Length: 511
Image 1: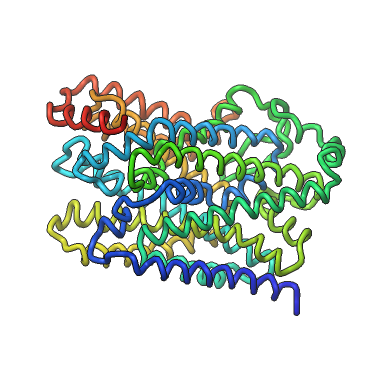
Image 2 (image 1 turned 30 degrees about the horizontal axis):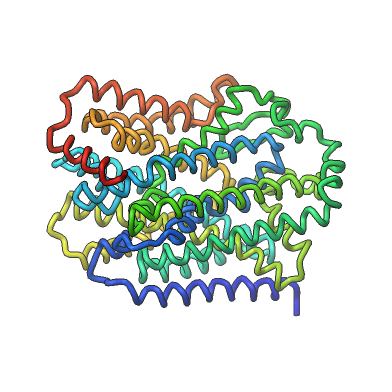
């Protein structure tokens, strides 16, 4: 049997297993309830909360985007991982419990836009509409990045056009998401998170062995001194999503390092992560869930970074562009393992991408069906009508995502844009909403709009101007959004006693 055929069998078997499990868990969904469909009626345990949060967050970027960036630009990219790790820890420590408690106090909010609206008693649903639109915009882009990762697997293994393979994977993801809602998605993401960390660990271990151990890796990398310098010059120049990254020879100074670490700020505003906090069964479960999630991230991200480093030692001249370098995980899996096992290992990329796409689809469908339609257009819409619209939305978003996936950009570049947009629009507002009672509706709206606007302007018009302003757009956008929320809130009338009472109730419930 041909090598490619054996690997294809493994990948097909994995997708079949996932689809079967999804259908089985779908039978537990009470299809008459939107709360069941979008939030699994807040019944997640510690393991599902932790692993589904981390798996949906890391996506195909962890297995392809991050190793590729390290391989191509050097180990200075570790600052991205450090920032993300710190952001994850802070999110679990300070945001998780308070958000879970507050969303229940705020009229049992089941989506982030709904929480913003009810938190500030926004009777005109302005916050609901704006935040739902932001979700629709950036998560539709995000779906494309993950479908691109799926397409790269099949095009690199089998030399097949990406489009048919992306469509097949999309059908599998849509099948269990449309039927089972958040309960099926969360359960499968927990399973797929386990597959991801196992695949990364196995490839890393075999990579070290094939490179002659740690000493062999260090010896092989001596020919690339810039690659090994955390604070020195960037190894190669490159472009992500049309925006120039740090060029070859650029010093990794304070601003450059801060720019990379700023990725961690995005966690405070990621709806697909925050909704896991909202879905946990009991506030008391967060201690165990936090330990599981942080441990998973430490192992998985450490392995991903190591794969980029090991790959550079083994194949120093293998990839000419950053986009090509994102296939280093695939290249190593094919080299180290027999075909059937290589297919199993590469299922980790499918797991990463599928666990993200299904979550993004639920966020987007809830934004349009629950927030836009039921929240603004037809407040008396039946549960059945809302879920039917949600499922139609998921299909349309997948079609849009396929278009984005075949546009030719890198996974790292597409993810960066969406991550910055969501992190700057929602991150500062989440923190102020949860921890500053004086935050007003006007401050919330101004800050949300500022974050999204600055991301677009900074990325497209300011970053390309000069190296001095070539900073990841999330950093300036996050800071300006926070400043605007603070100043506008102080300049406007303080919240009502009812809002302040709810704030204190949520604070007490989270203790």
